[in-house]
Length: 185
Length: 150
Image (cartoon, rainbow over all chains, first blue to last red; front, top):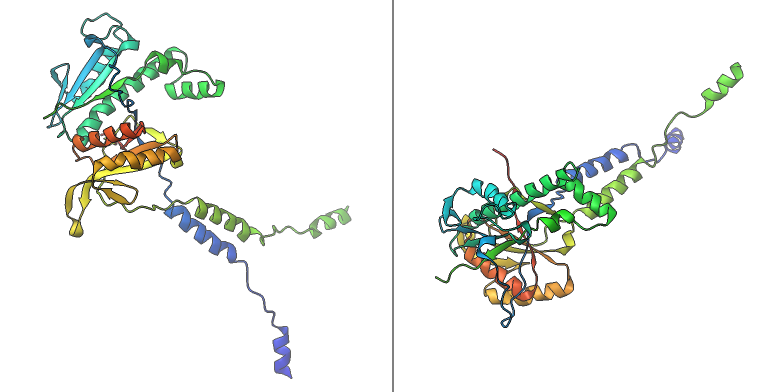
């Protein structure tokens, strides 16, 4: 009798207080293993396919800053050997020249950067050069945004997105980068 | 007065913890759902180059990847340069335009992310770009790592 009594008293409950801890452990495991990797890279827009019967518009030699990257990853800027780090200033001078120096572009809107590589050029040399050219544009946009009273270009972009306005800086200093075809070997 | 105090003391001061696991489970399920596992196995090595002028691609569903790099062979050896789209290695670069054109019809705002190994030669990259121009997928992105300032 006494045995039966004992059984009756025992309650068949699962302790739920540790459930939260178990769930927390699982949560932490997933938090740690999740990699929300944001893709980063250098954005470009390729030129559309050329129609055979339409000639490309003529461009004045003076408005083009020619950058050549050879098989060894060495750089020529306007036929002058140059270090990769110097390209940034060269691009800025070219784009913001406004007709002062006859070696550089006539006006900002017409300035064009042409990057030409050989077929054997290593990819990282090409990306290094392209990176410098883009950095030059980023810095020019930053400077332009500061002259308009914004701390930097990113804040300017946020402000025009709110106002749904045109990006005046990008229209003024247009990033015109052309990737030229290598000479047929 | 003392009666008032007694009344206050009688109210339960415990926070009900019974729903805590449910809250945590909700969080857990959110993370489980939002986690994206890599669904393609990359058959070429892509050590990305480093760059400074980076832009982020926020909308992942717009992105399609093209991998260019030396093929991974058995025993950590590397082979010829190969081009991979989704799961398949592309033997003939001429087929890229049809593959990418189909993708463009499905997603008109397509961004092509080129994951190119830093040791690759420009020749193959330019060939692929030429095919992309033929297909009409003009928005590209040279995938790069953030440069660690030295």
